Amino acid sequence: MADGERGRIGEGEAKTQASTPSPASGKPSSTPSLPSSPKARLTPKALRQNIASRLSALPRENIYNVPNILTFSRLVATPVIGYLVVHNQHAWAVGLFAYAGITDLVDGWIARKWKLQTVVGSVVDPMADKILMTTLVCCLAINGSLPLPLATLILGRDASLAIAAIYYRWTSLPEPKTLTRYWDFSLPSAEVHPTTISKLNTFLQLGLIGATLTLPLLVPAAAGSGESLLKPVAELLGRAEGVKTIVIGLQGVVAATTLWSGASYIWTKDAVKILGDDEVLKKKQGFRGRMVIGGTFGIVLAVTAALAWRDWTEENDDGKEEGEGK
Image 1 (cartoon, rainbow, N blue to C red):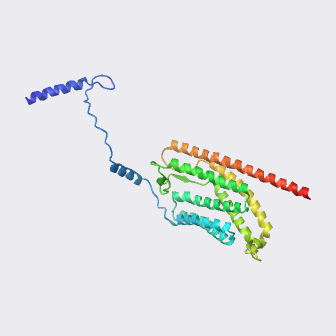
Image 2: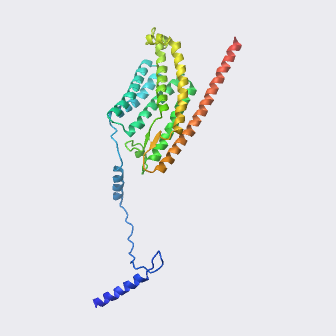
Image 3: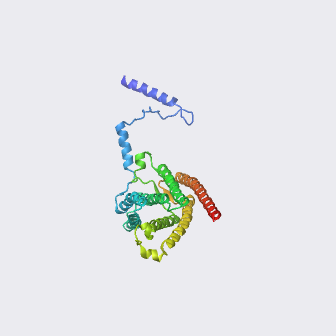
């Protein structure tokens, strides 16, 4: 009985198999169709474990080293320097500014010497320089020590690069994109390689800021004493008039290098390197980032030109009034 039933079941299965059409040819297929199993669903706990395992597999860096500590100390000193400038504490401001300049040189040397370079260092180091420059340019422009068009050009260039950096970081961040992971700089997603003219521009800007900060110390009245704190240097540079001439010359040079530096980030493809394996996507992201810089920096140039034109017309009007008064 069992054998007979088994035979009949086998015959039925054979007929079923023979009558099943093949998807490709439309003819009966000899391969039996297996029942499809329902799609497995992950429990919330399993889903969290899956995400955690993927995040832990992403590369991380040790960001707690001497170069990065020096860089962050520069960030901490920046608001203090700005406070000292606004309150005319020029000697202390110059001292802390010198500390910032020395640490800017030393941290890079240490990182290269002992192979302590990190992606976060490549991002935070230029960012610390820009925050320092932004703070001091704002304070000196408020005091009238820097022309407003030049301050606008310097700050606007940095702002355009900062906006592009926000775009680069977000678009290159691996999934999932969250604010927590966005600010986690131990998850590298892009590398910044400043252009040669940008490095020169940073050096010249620091020189201009240093000269502008030191100027009050070279003039006895501004120093608040009968003797200049830097009398030998003042005598060497031709006292106040000589230093002012040097500062005005530096202002013109810095304006030119700032313009050139901002434009270099538009046409230089390797200034920002997006990490990842998808070359097509990286090219699109890089092109869009450069267009962000181009659009924002173009607005900055227009505003700078308008301010320069306003100052020039006001100076001409004042000159005419003085001539008529005589």
